[in-house]
Image (cartoon, rainbow, N blue to C red; front, side):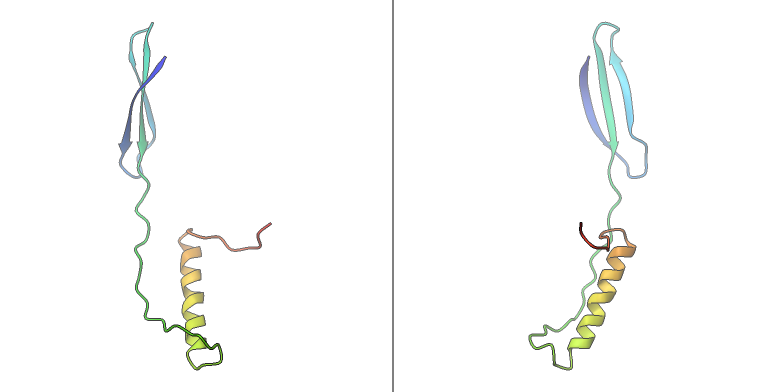
Length: 83
């Protein structure tokens, strides 16, 4: 038994293995679906805060919290304690 070709399928399709060759020389060909395209980045105009007591600090914290929420909801990151 040998591995023949490995092909990339369309996102959302099933993985597929087809058999080729002969009864004495089996060849397995694989099709593995491509992953879905992830979310695109959204530019944010977030000022750099070097002093956390400045007026910009709450706005930056709110933007970062929303970014983290969006990443969690998209399944890109998980929350919780490491352990």
